[in-house]
Image 1 (cartoon, rainbow, N blue to C red):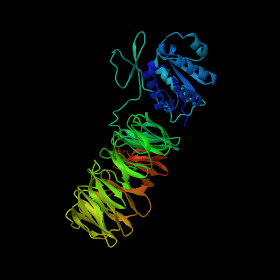
Image 2: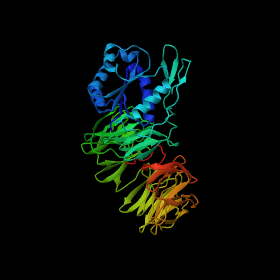
Image 3: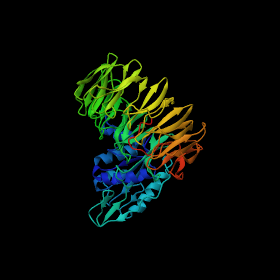
Length: 533
């Protein structure tokens, strides 16, 4: 989607321009501003020409510095030649040179240095009413400008020096990114992010938007993937064919059929030289990442050094210091130096959890071994799952049950399916055509009467009785919210997204509507969530 406003400014006025850009975007007006929107791989001049061509109008931050800038003069000339509307926003009273006077003498100037508040209010209204401009949301009142006499400036404000006083240019507040929790929401066919108060922190301008991981979220624009921070800054440009979320400071990216890794600043720290698909959702794990070259798998470290050569038919990521590798159809385990700790002799196997791993010792006979390869649970089950919170699924005669670490049966073999336990100590299970939830002692805490359930999140689980509507139950199985919603998702940070009559909003744990049902799509308030799209 094209940006509506090109902000022309001297690099020496960057703080002022960035502040004004944030105010405009807070009011739903998309902006193009350098260097934020410069696309790598295209010349600076090429970026500028394309941006001016595609914008609806130009806002010129006019100052002593821009009056001396040849780059700004070139931008005005290009906009003038394309009959673009140019709005000069004067932040000081420097007389215009002859070149500027030629282009701007008949333009209406917004004199900001006498009354910044009125000038910004008028600028927002002027742009929003322009016939060629599409505003992403209704304009809101801009924050008030406040006189400031001290020379020390708050990190959330930008100081503009004029001949007689110091004026503080308001910006949208920048909360600590680590504390700011955002949720992906959809308006029309575009995605953005809101905070828990319902403020649209990142405008709905993307094809797709995923959960934040390590302070960055994967977004898609014009069919290409990149990453934004919690203030909407595009840290990794949307130029990749696919990408995983960040983990341990790295994200895998694909371009022209090759994979590599970028860091939190968007630098391709590990070149795009690897083939096939990086392990989706796993990424870097314990300082190592699985990569594939010439049809074989190996591992690299965070510097891109190939620590384990690409000699294996398949691999899993490292877990508890060991990684599963497959060669000639048999599974074994290596350490981070590539030493084979457990020989490749098992038919099938999982990943280490809580010091043990589930392996197929014989055909259709599963058990558990420790990190030295010692058999600690004999292969007598059709299947054994990994241990989580000291409990594992076992399967016999086509039915599943639960055991503890000593091998004691916690439940009989009566379940058709048992899913993995979450960190809260609960798991979903399926029996007799209905879903319910078990705790780590094997007790049925949510009765098996639902056509769909989610696992507990923050003490509540989504349930659907008889293929109808959705509600929520607590850990005692009590329905705390009756099933009245078309659909619902997990709670996160005290709120859950729900859909009613085709629109999404958020409810709190008492069932009160916390954020109105006005969105076309919504996901939970979560950090380090799974990939959505």
